[in-house]
Length: 216
Image 1 (spheres, rainbow, N blue to C red):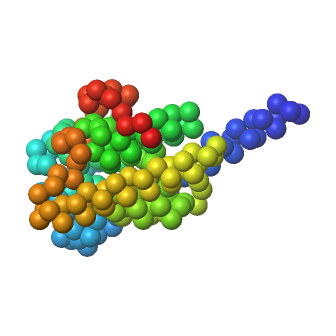
Image 2 (cartoon, helix red, strand yellow):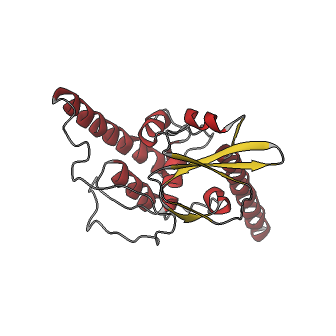
């Protein structure tokens, strides 16, 4: 009987995770009426329209808004940095394990704080999942320059609570540099280490190039 109960619980967890991923994925494809509407979500240097989810393409501009056009409809996918990818890769969301979540969240926070030049692509999703059911989601949206929809569940084991505290620290740091730049006539570098930040789509998991990590 105990084994049957475990199997039922495992199936429910699997179904619940698939349901959450499907809901998140639907938020990644925002329906738009024309390409100019991407400016509601980001401020790209270039807009690229793609006609197939599995067509591989390359971007060279600092930031490129990707738009999918299919069956007479247009969808804003995301704003990406230079690299080679396809829409299937951009909207594919791997299941987030609680064991990996804290490390990925801290990697993303390092990136937002200007302490890291590179970040694993899954880290952005991990931080969003941690904050999606909290008021701090607004801070994340402002820092990311994106508009992501709220979800219903927080991450367990205090992961969301820790992420809320840390994003507030990064948010204050970000605004302190903005205020310093304004008071000095805009000549202060908002990045404390001068890191040139970008997010390669194919960066190997856990690989670091900046020689260290911010100790929160």
